[in-house]
Image (cartoon, rainbow, N blue to C red; front, side, top):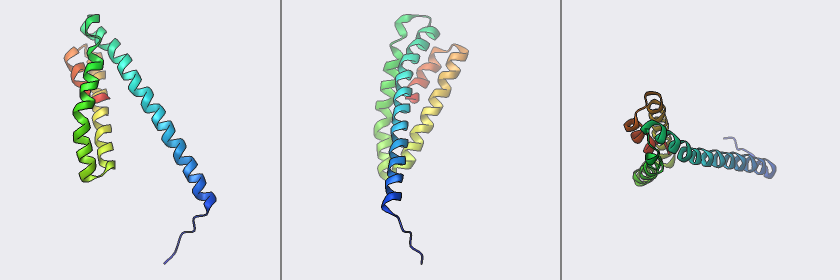
Length: 119
C-alpha cells in the first residue's frame, strides 16, 4: 500500500488555489444574479410592451428561488450536495434558455415561466 506525503507547503498552495476559485465563483454568481434582475426588468418591459410589468422580473425570480430552496435542500440532505447543486444549475440553465426564447419570440408568458428558474 502506498501513502501520499502531503507537505505543509503543498496543502497551503491547494488551500490558496481553492479559496481563489471559490471567491471567483461567488463574484461571478453575484454578478449573474444582479444582472438577472436588471436585464429581466428591461426584458419584461420590452416583451410585455408596458413598463408596468418590469417589476414582474424581480417578483418571479424571488418566487422561483423561494419555491426551489426547500426541495433542493431536501435533495441535498438525501442524495448529497453535489446532486442538488447540479440540479439547481440545470434548472437555472433551462430557465435562461426559456428567457432567451421569450426574447426571441416576444412571449411574455414564456418569460414569466423562465424567470423563476433562471435565478
